[in-house]
Length: 86
View 1 (cartoon, helix red, strand yellow):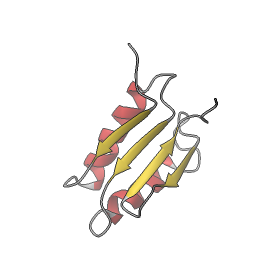
View 2: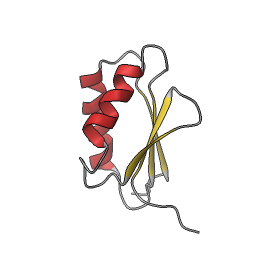
View 3: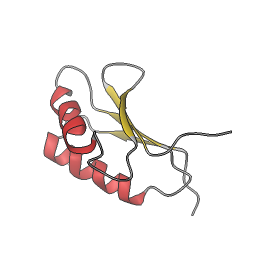
View 4: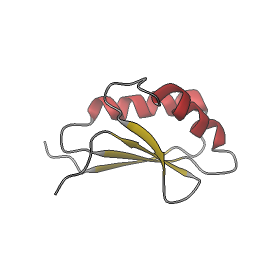
């Protein structure tokens, strides 16, 4: 089963707990070809999800997540699972 290098997850409308459950499921399903999970949580009401991501998955909380980083705008957070190499 081939998987894309990015997994996109739109978590609008979820609570922080629901979002973390969904993200944890995506991390478990990610295989060696996946290097990032891009999480779209929104900015205004998505801050609770963003804070939960950093709290629950940042700083070595999950061994598959190298780091948590901001996305291309404040409503996106990315989980780096491995470094991309060419």
